[in-house]
Image (cartoon, rainbow, N blue to C red; front, side, top):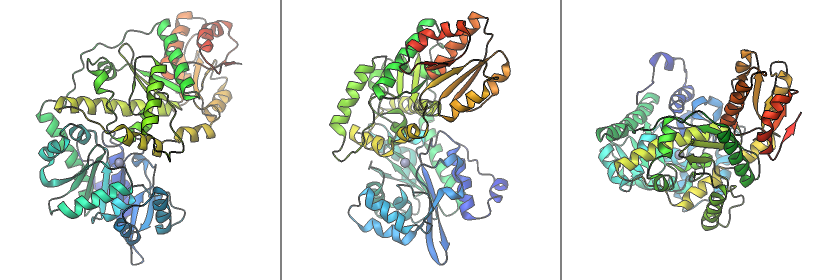
Length: 499
Ligand SMILES: [Zn+2]
């Protein structure tokens, strides 16, 4: 992995907090390091004679982070917390609020205490793919030692928050030397730290490169992709996908958008002879499970998946858990289709697909290195519960979240398209004018140019729509031929509406 540090660019960031946003974005822009709100960074500054920790706010995405996304906390107040034996999450939240120097600041990262106790001005944390591929193996600690030598300390898996901060504090107090530039958190990710923005960032890149080199030196970096791409879609495929979306939405209890990915990587993974074993061990880092669930569904039997998921909830949820996740899958692997990803909007279906594609690489490389190993189910469920809830927020905010609308003559019906998008629907815009394709660039919009009098073009447009969003719930057209062609899809929607 290459350092993207650029002196000219860096010079444009005039103070340390600005520089903190610069290198945070460099990390966040690299999907092999961190995705969708994962990871966090911090810098320790002096303000009015006091040491202040600026740590990324919870949920902010490193790729687009700004100075406002960092929460300023009194360092001494945070550091003193590490002396306690335990702190509940609620108490920790209250302590963070009390330590903030700006009450308007975002909610500080759950890892704020960990950032505070590390005696370095700059601290970076990612869920780097290459590090996880080395660490998530049966003898992960030995591989990490071989790959990194004495430049990192190894911290056993602990739940994020106080328990993890405590474990890191113990290991750091005992084992840190002048050579220590980072920490590997088993089944979770990696920290790097340094005295300058550049040093800290480049240590992260250097450590990740070492993990990559370790895998490359064993000839397991390249993942064999032996399978041809899927054939063109058929009517049957279209109906089977729509039926699958209906079943998954039914299991969730609310409508969901579903996207098919028949890329070579997804097909090759879905056709692995050891899929049933490898894919069912669990996620590479708990944060991934928030988007993908603990394991993917194999094949098309939604009832079997939900029954297994309910057992997982019954066996692993703590009694205090207030809100449990729904039992519907978010990733489906099928040897014929490749990967199907599911989300409350197209953005989240795409996020699940992207995260799982990274997961496929991590798992494949770890399995080639030795044997991929994940966490006990109860640890994964704890993360699913703690960081979940965004789907409910989306549903509260957007009346049509998870629903799919098809709008005919979309260029003349732009107001309608806007309205539907504003309410959270995924919208397919059809028009005979190719300008329909570029009406919107967001993932919730698919513009398709098709001649309404050409049945073959119309069929192809519907097939593409179903591959992209999984079906159609709402049809806006006065064309009887299009209405007839959509009828079998609408029959598979529990929310069907025509206008
Ligand atoms: Zn993390």
